[in-house]
Image (cartoon, one colour):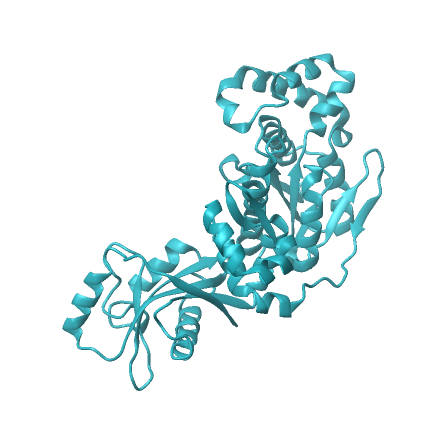
Length: 403
């Protein structure tokens, strides 16, 4: 079975507008409207839905770029296909996706029973994926798009080997990023020129970023990935890390008023880097060399306990709570009211670490350490844990471990 991610454009309505004045008039009513205005435009939406379905019935596969390209992909793959339709943050893209989903899933679909479509507006309308605001597109839209693609890859397709991306529809502005993502993930890209039956498969080429660059500046990248959302802090950070910021220029989005974060390109390569590394945030008062070994032990124990079945945030925390207070990963129970736990090391000093962690997809990507203690009596835990019920302000050093 192949899982084909298909960004949805508006070719259904633009094609229909060429020959049908009713489609043109209705489409013009919603063409430039954001998805947030959906409920206020129900009359126009339902009118356009009805006449667009008539247009598809008359023109079948040639009615839209998404239908035509899916039909050609089906013939090429010769296997069952699930089409994941992803809409931009607009009324027209969501409406097109809903119409396509219903037509593909119709028992009498021209694509046949081996092709099904999936579209849930609450998950598959990609927030801020729109071109009216380039800042929101870069800061929110592209990260949201890749988060959804990764969710489908990890939780639906079972990995990139079962995934493909159909880039025939959707925003042209996303194509460079989708291409790089697909190359890194070894995912095939399909494209179909309108009015032609030929399918272009974009070939895989060796693509990798300089690993030394990533290793050298991983701590800087990790901090920028968390967003430096204050212009004064960003100027100070940039001054302290001049060389790194200069070398990482293509990976950084910055604004004189808003601060800085990873660019869409930076997000792609950073997430790829985290497949083989995890981030550690350590309080600046703690010595890294004295803690590396026990932190690696913590990571390996967490990985064994949680992978691959529990790697969503809620299920991870619930899993640790279910281990009970005597388990080393949840020693004496979590810090009350917070997803912070105590790890008891198996080394001879029985070091305790107070920690939290972050998961992304099926990977533990970050461990944050709040404090470290040597062997202490059980009653002392109560005092120690109470100190952290309201976390104090801390300064952290950030670095990465290879997995």
